[in-house]
Structure formats: C-alpha cells, structure tokens
Image 1 (tube, one colour):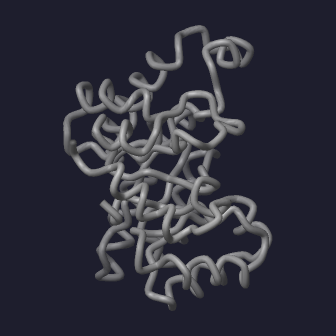
Image 2 (cartoon, one colour):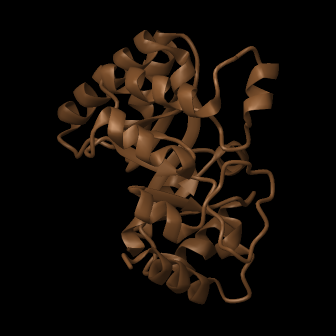
Length: 236
C-alpha cells in the first residue's frame, strides 16, 4: 500500500523538502512538488529529490495554449519526474498535443515515460462554487466529462476527488489512473478541501494514488502516521 501514497511537500525551501524526503522515502511511494515549493526553489529541488532516490509528482497543473503546454511538458520529461499534470479545462487539443510530445521526448531520451495526468475539478470546489465560475453541471458530472475528454486525448489518467473515483473507473476503464487529493484521516480536519474521504475509503473505491499532506506532515509522529494510513488502505 505504501507505493500508493504520495506525500505533499507543502514547504517553501529545498532544505525542508529534502528533510521530509530523507525522513519518509522508505515508507511512501513518492513526493509531490507543487507550486509553492517549485516557485520558491525552481527545478533544482526536483533534481535534488531525485538524487535521494525518491519519486516525484510534479503538480504544476499546466494550463495554457497547446504549444506552450507541450513545450513545458517536454521540460518536465527532461527533468526526470515520475508523474506530472496539466489542467483538463485546457481542452482536447492542449492535452493531445502535450501527450504526443511527452511520448516522443521520452522515446527520444530512451527513458520511462512519466505518468501524464489531467486535473478535473479541484477538491476545494463544490457545486455552488462551480456555478459561480459559470459551470452549471454538478461536480461529479463535470469530472466524468473531463475524464472522458482526457482519455480521448491520450492522457494516462486524471486527478479527481475520491468521491468521483468509481464513476471515473466505470466511464474510462480500470486501467485509467485516478490520483486523489482530498484524503483526510478520520481524526483530521478537512481544511480547505470539500469533497473528501478517508484513506481506507479512497483505496477501496479504487484510487491508484493518494496525495496526502497535512495528515502526515502535521502528525506528532509522521512515520507512524504513514504506517497507520497504509494499514487503513489494506482491503478489509
């Protein structure tokens, strides 16, 4: 189960990030480098984490014109990340051209292609907040629509809340990867997340990877927290 756990490095320095990597790399699958850390430290933090022998999910949610996102995706491949994402709302052409670019660059470099996924609807968004943004369909319907679009564009999977895992698997097939943030232990607060589940619930629903931050990094004993989460994810 530990290989399914992605720890979110929600810190602002390279040293803090590397400290967490050294502390947890034997107990989890990989680490998420998001906008805060990447903006603060740049691509060097990715190289440093890779040098520690840890996997990386680069969570920058590229969303721009197709040519720009395809070019950025090539750079992500060159960085050697294991997984990264774009935003599905960028549309079919953006995703399809980027997916082609990722495959071609990985083949050119003779390296394993990173898992390339698309963000559907942020876990902080409710049906009401979607309506405020002009999206009138319920979150679950919008997630399903964007997941199908991502699959048609050649993406490997999507990021979605745990509440939509089953409908994505039913619509796109069991091999279509679902990465789920919005995972909270039963004893932790939901913070700014809205559509959440516990690790056990998300795993049993079919999640391929769980992105977990504060329930681990804010725990009194992070290693023990990871082990408890892994145990909770085991089939009953």
